[in-house]
Length: 500
Ligand SMILES: [Zn+2]
Image 1 (cartoon, protein in one colour):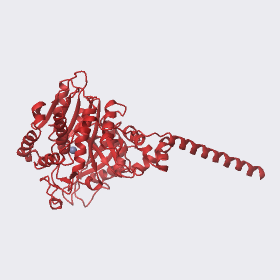
Image 2: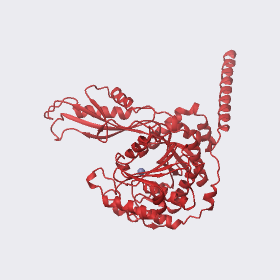
Image 3: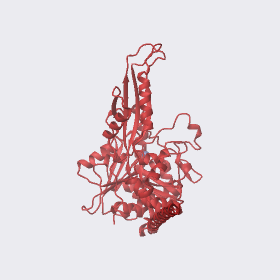
Image 4: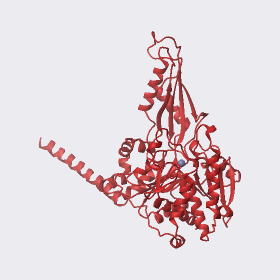
């Protein structure tokens, strides 16, 4: 008995020692989890320029008045609004329009070339789009100020496009106009690429601009497009605003499932109709999502955000070698973070018989997948077939009515000089913010540069509150005047930094 007690005492001792050692290792990892943030002063030019904030705000406000809405139905395209906006931009940015080369591509999209003095430096591309989404029917009355007047009230510029993405187009041109007014001449060539159809896929805008640049053998050092923003309160344990720099965007494919059966009257049905078989397939797909992984952009996010967290949260993220499974579980709980770590599954459409008492001959369903870098459309199709295990259901991949889909983007580097300069620009203009890489969950026009740019970063320097966030494609879209000024300053700073 004594010996058994002694043995169990020893085992307890060893376990205790192991726990203490493990805890010790975790503590060491946590204390070595070094911050990747730094401080940087604004460059001399930005310190000396006095910006006339009210006229800068007025110029963005003026652009909101043109209803440059992209409709899936192309017959609704409003030429007057688009050409009106282009004329307006020419009048408000005289220096840019008289000194930069301008090409009009694909009807209304614009490619500006700000020719650099050095031919040995690869150019950069600053992208944005000036089409907007419409106003959802029935929500017009909910806008505090009308969506297409660009009113400046309560410290905000209100209206559709203030965040997505006239802020980019007008902001980039404003930054260039200000730099030119202060004698800045770039060494490195800078392109401004503005699409007019991003909200409906960018096929006639950004796609054609990218093809034009590619045909000229241009390999951009980096591309900067919309995507991440500066947000507060997104990550538990991080109090400071977080600047989300999109390193990668997801792929896109819709999978159409088709089940056939004999049809007939519904009074003597088989056990499962074609619609019933499809329903089972969809349930299986929802219950068996593609596997999650913390890698690439999400892994970098942990490396950048983790050291800024407090106490147990920092300990948790510093030891991702041990806690990876728990992190995946935690991320899987919310739709937003779940989409960052796996290829997402969304059943969106279904059809069967047109008549209630007739069995469907053909039933169809569509499941939309957003692919995480590392997964391919081929992987998705294999996953669908293996999961539904029903060879009588046909499986077809398409995107916006066309065969196939978009593969996910490559993952941009955090080691590159461009990333360093981007991070530096953020610290210079938003000294309070923490910069972190991020996995974009939507898609942008920058996808057309996937095969030609060294690195693509997706970031609009807009400081956004929870309340402002609902404005993206929603009601009461607005940008704080102060936030827009910082956006212009950031763009000026980034162009200066990339020129060093
Ligand atoms: Zn956009």
